[in-house]
Image 1: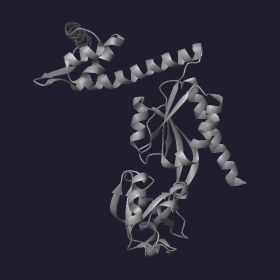
Image 2: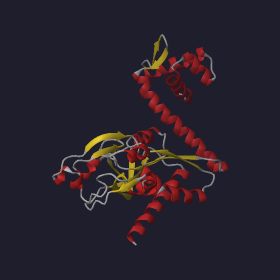
Image 3: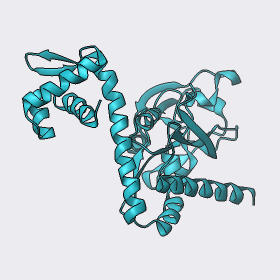
Image 4: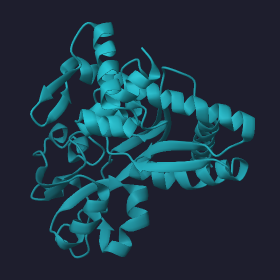
Length: 303
């Protein structure tokens, strides 16, 4: 199997057409068809299904394409790293960051990193938990910063706890429950679930039932905290969110923190990476910078 075979499979998956794939790869359609047959002969099974509208990947083809995408990305990264060592050419490191990680760690860590590695472009991607781990596994991300999934991780990912992120309960200014001091006073509240179930924005983390209280009554679900900021100021609802996120965005959006005296949960921000190969040199140095920033924040809290 050659690298061109992997590009062929990915092109077919993207275009759904032999002709369009041939144009994308700058080869003739007969040559592409011949290469596809060689690949199918090598694996002993059909990799594509021909339909009146074109082609689509067969189940075996989908499995191979998923691996092919990772292989192609790794080869591209290898070329980039070799070029970096030879010419100090520009490299790119892509990091998935949760809202709390973006506020707590990213600004100073990236500034420190870029002062020493100005040629490296850092690309930050909003980490939609837990989809971010799928992106990390596929090679779309080099690193990820965010909460640990409730289901845990497999052996293909390495995880490292960096720093805790306290949570607060927020509501619009003037909300009837805005002055409540105890969770028991929120029995009639409408709650917003932000992100996925069991994620950082799920009020289930308050463990109300363990306190003998009714479970939170979720009346709205938001995919992201950005969406939450847009809708919460106009609603009689309450929501759980990272304290650092509230401090940066809450007051100017007409939100207040409920002065709850009961202990509230906190989310630990972790750093994730794949275990299937070494990090590129720029990626390792950016990882080091995130670790240094987390260490500095922990020391500041203890002071």
